[in-house]
Length: 473
Image (cartoon, rainbow, N blue to C red; front, side, top):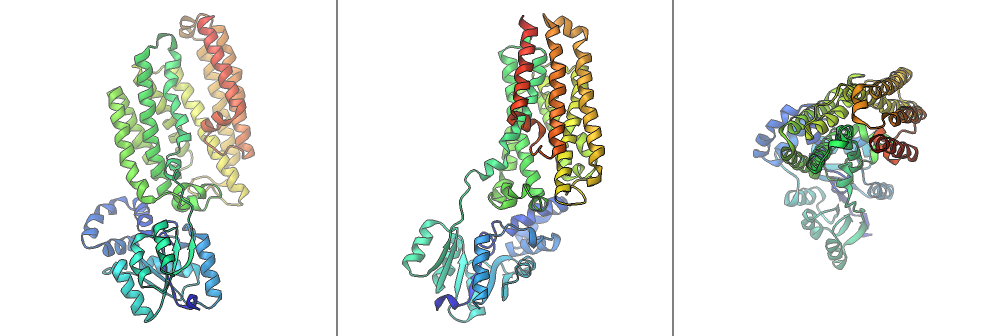
């Protein structure tokens, strides 16, 4: 049978739902970002040299890479039938051999070295030199057409339809393995659901709602959009830098980059575009908003690469990131944040950050792991985390009560007594968040959870009615 001829298999985009070159780049950014400054010099010496230098500096765990399961199953079956299989890839030999060793069904490996980039004509020549006769080839892209036209049989993995039709008409198509296209994968990677947290920029405006005008409203909207774009850029950086940890997580492994649904290259290109747009919009609001946004960017970058690995420091950083949104809202409407708002923000956001960690520790315990991966907490810390978080949440209720009894509230609202209903509402919501966290039911960020949770939405509606009543009745 013609299917018995040696099958040469491409790696990036065919066997893998990713590209090892870009996997290596993001790993180097995480491990030794200063080394990336040398990348242009490596590239000037050829793409093969770039791949070689990257492979020497980073180690990719072949066991965690996002493989195409359908393709792997087909190759296992072919191997069981006695068919010779050869991995033929443009990736560096060191990485290709690690993949071949992990999978265990390849007879040989053809890959790039420090001098030769095994793609296009060079890959075809290597295949012909290795095989010396008829061969079959599995690929996925236009770059593989040259090799397919010289092959006796072709396996098309997620290839464009016109290429598949051409192979079928030539009578060379052995198998087509479609790869579902996720057009919204990159959009999902931006985490638009997390933009809800940026509604905090409107919080200072609520405190002076009776003095707001159209200009201040649009200023808050500008700050909101700027923070959304900046946050999405950081989410991309976070997901790209955490690929290995996410792939080991039962839920995070389905994230667009971790699963291979979104292109790492597209993610890298989107980051500077989003940041440029964010700061351009912030400049239209005020220079102070630009400064706060810059502080947010610096802190969240430090959190992504360093701070999140240290217990307590990480949750303080998260609480500060929440608070910076509030400060941006104050800057947008040119109102100095009050002592009460800052005190309330410290306690409530510290509590919410700890709730997020408590939920992660619950997941780690369920999976029988000793600690939360990539975090500075052991599973045995869960009781302490819960105590600190619940205490901070209830302290925020105390701060709210003291604020409602302050002279400025009495002066600002016609009927401030209505506002006392906010305390039991906040007490109810904080208690619910922590009950969900302890039960392991708090999957999302607490603020995102609140938007999706019916009881939390009812609390928001009731609190809004109380504030309106205090202002107007």
